[in-house]
Amino acid sequence: MLIVMEDGASEEDVARVVAQIEAMGYRAHPIAGTTRTTVAVTAVQGPLNPADFEGLARVKEAIPVSQPWTLVSREARVGPTQVTVAGRALGAGRLAIIAGPCAVESHEQTAAIARAVKAAGAHFLRGGAYKPRTSPYSFQGLGEEGLKILARVREETGLPVVTEAMDTETLDMVADYADVIQIGTRSMQNFPLLRKAGRCRRPILLKRGMSATIEELLMSAEYIAAGGNQQIILCERGIRTFAAHTRCTLDLSAIPAVKARSHLPIIVDPSHGTGRRDMVRFLSRAAIAAGADGLLVEVHNDPDHALSDGAQSLLPDQFAGMMDEIRAIARVVGMTL
Ligand code: PEP
Ligand code: MN
Image (cartoon, rainbow, N blue to C red):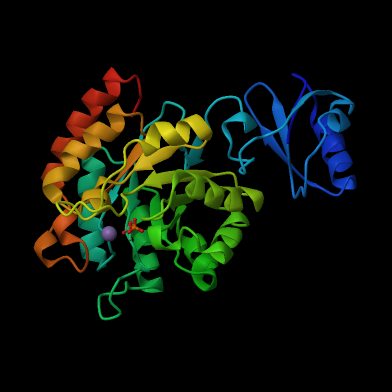
């Protein structure tokens, strides 16, 4: 159930309604919009009667929510959510480009790539310090040393950092270094990790599980939001299909599908989505044209010797060329970079 407050209801009015809902035995989550506040009611077993809420002071209406996610639903907010990281906004008409290596390998490598993607117009640096690898014998990431390198490169370049947390044990440490915490495709339904991310003070970049439906993606986002963290960016990164010409099938229909159901921003990762450097540029262009709020792109200065995902990593000059095209398409679809 969503409780829509009257326009101009004060913080005290909202706090009183929250207390009244909690006294009924439910949980109440205020969601501040640009013109009005909505209070989402969760922890509900069985049907609710809108009339029980519509009688509360300064409540305009109570709207039953038909889908199983409430806080991230389209109805929960007027308009799309904009996530702001280190002064840079993402969503609601503002595109953000996140670029960098798959894995942090050294300070020299990360700094060189960061300088190159910044010069080409990227807004965030990505790079994994904890890498979820299919094989236990593959490079697993530098761990905390990698986080320290990312923090140092942020100081040197001014680029905010996006990096993955793989488990509940290291989430707090990753949050100490990162500006945005990525939850990867293999962790999308790691419910203890989602719950802890919900209590985290950093924005979360939640990637779609490679076999997950849009509904499952939104339910995972709801876990984070229910914990109190509404700063969530969704990411389409390709799903498993029978197609063998790409690593995954990038599902660009996820963009309008998410936007029809949720106020959260959604970005696209064409690197993992295709697994092929020669396709990244085309799918990036298509993603922005289809309404994505940004891109997550792997870039490496020596992809032949990359410790992970070299085959899908763009060279810095290829990334720069792609950014010129993205700027042109952004203008056409009315988005600002
Ligand atoms: C990554 O971003 O490097 C990564 C491992 O992504 P995914 O979880 O989408 O495979
Ligand atoms: Mn990767």
